[in-house]
Amino acid sequence: MISAFYRDTWIEINLDAIYDNVHSMRQYLRDDVKLGAVVKANGYGHGVIEVAETALKAGADFLVVAILDEAIQLRQAGFQSPILVLGVVRSSDAAVAAQHNISVTVFQHEWLESAINHLPEGAKLSVHIKCDTGMGRLGFRNAEQVKKAEEIIKNSGVLSLTGIFTHFATADELDNTLFQKQYARFTEMVSALSERPSLVHSGNSAASLRFEDTWFNAVRFGISMYGLSPSMEIKECLPFPLKEALSLHTKISHVKQIEKNETVSYGATYKAQEEEWIATIPIGYADGWLRKLQGQEVLIDGKRMPIVGRVCMDQCMVKLPSFYPVGTEVTLIGVDGTELISVDEIAAKLETINYEVICILGRRIPRKYMKAGQVCSVHNDLI
Ligand SMILES: Cc1ncc(COP(=O)(O)O)c(C=O)c1O
Image (cartoon, rainbow, N blue to C red; front, side, top):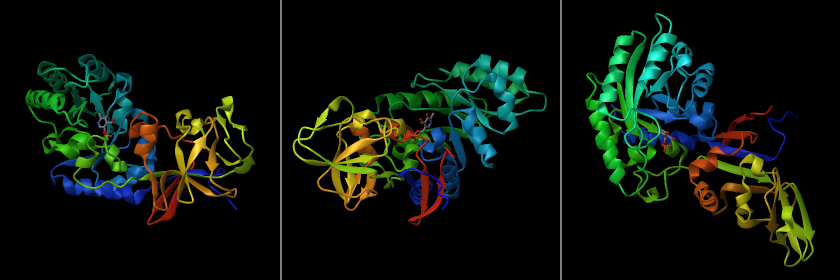
């Protein structure tokens, strides 16, 4: 039998959940507001192609990525919708972006001058002006700089101003002080333009779910498309329920009973207090299941059981309350019976944010895509 992968560790992506999250957002926004689906970083670890397809079907108007390579990957996969690159693109690659009809983010006058020199006659590169209103990352910092950028673009003949945007640093926090300052600065910078480009956008998931004013006429919807709250602080004040799309599973690969005082894994940090059943599962830190997850519980047979001993590169061990056979399914993220281990629970254990948990899940873990409870496709990056 031909199998699409040869290791019993896999991620399940519920495409219906992604569809529903995008659809709910589409219904929540005014009709004149365009919905940008943020699919950078391999669709936040979910798989860029499948996520992009689902988001567009559910009503997204354009795709958003971080780097030019991600945008070209989408074009090569046949996506024809508008694509915006949020991060830096080399000015020497302006012609490549233009050739693929990809919009790029601009935030330096020197970059504009250099890109103009790299664009062949007849080319047209769509650009979005980025305003740094308080994030301190990329962007023009005042209205004068924005005005000058607009002038350079207008006079270039090869650049076309299709958007202007900013990014909020604290939209996911209950304290709105910096958010309000950023909003005011952005409004001022947009007003400095002699002509409004077709897309004016500022909202990530947090801002666009919380503050209608940030919509202008487009939003960049990322983390919540995947069913996750932008932060724990605002989890209870979101306008519609989100459906978590990703779950992580494996199967017991080995089971044994160990004696009292026997130890488990590197460093012998775990010592059995009595005779204990120990299962080995084939997932480790090379898969993004980090060493700090020692002590984290997993679900077997609808019950929580702890990871004992250090997490190894490709495997780790679980303490069982009694014997379970090799091949028993283990859920590391997701639902089993009445128990749930959410991405947020793993993020709390790792003292990080849910974004990081899903992005670091390794590309060597195959993704199974589910629709109506059935596997509709499998993606294995390795073979
Ligand atoms: C500039 C920009 N816009 C939008 C997003 C999407 O944010 P979120 O995933 O919080 O919706 C990001 C994410 O990092 C970003 O950097």
